Length: 435
Image (cartoon, rainbow, N blue to C red; front, side, top):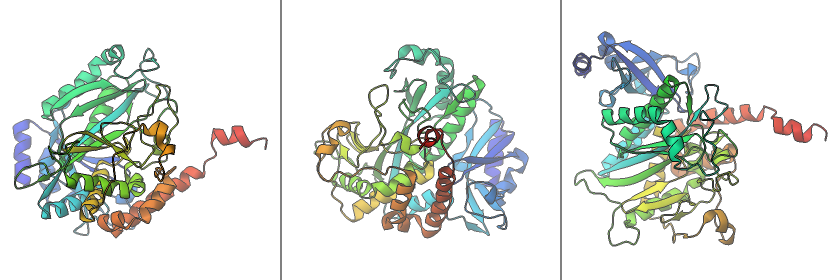
């Protein structure tokens, strides 16, 4: 393994490797390692002080070692002398059980034992802002309904095309770029793949977009809701299960009106059953809950869910069936850790399959308008604390993702919530100073 990477570096002209891992909050951490030393990094891992990042560790813990996965190698299109490598975390010669990539790999290994493979595609939305992050970078991007705005899209042609060209060069098969529903918001789509590969690519994509935006004098953000009156950044995930041996899509059924198999409907049932707990993972920040359950934006719709429901090709629900053989979860946002997001969704869906959970009939209504007329329709959590409590009490996810991950994630996220609530906001001052 080490020699193959060293040889690859010589073939591609790579002088340095970024050995990178994602912490529990989805922040990418890395060390820059010269190609001459990559053998040692592959054998023992690059050492990090885990407590210095968002991992559940203390300064008394030994080093964690990031062991790169050679199969994840991505040569930076804008700096080809550097290769990026996703890494798995080890400590005391054991995988770190709460490290996000390890969590996903464990779920996928269990899935492989069933003879299945999860394939995912993601729709990563992002804003292009001024360098200080306070304003939309394009001051002329001010339409009330800016979605698909041709003029605003082409004013950002140099940057958007550079990002898309990079994905083409990497072989990701990008197929469309568009201006999204908020001023200054864009989306670039590429082809779905096996879930671990998609998570690696999503992690790298965020780095790529931010880096190239800086090159063009802008700041890119995947923050769920940077502006209260504009549509937020979602990261809709498309899902399908495949037979590993036969290479067939197990979610496809041409005889069904929506093109889905009974397995796919049970998977939907599992996601609906654990939806409140899923929110703790796929909408993981205080700001995430500014996006879901949000009031109508200036464009006329938030495009984010507010009910635990599913429908056909209807974008007002948490789960949409956009076409045969796949389902779309619209709950996830731009802050979600790509590895944890895929793992939690998979485990919820597998529970649905195992327990034969019936999702019930499709709700072919406008959930933004008609939800109060539907008896028993559950709402998504109002804030991060509610979601964390739902996650803690959900044995489906806590058992599947493991006690160490559950303990560590809840510990750090609750600390984040306490930190948030300790701050006095400008709204509080304005409304209660003279009470």
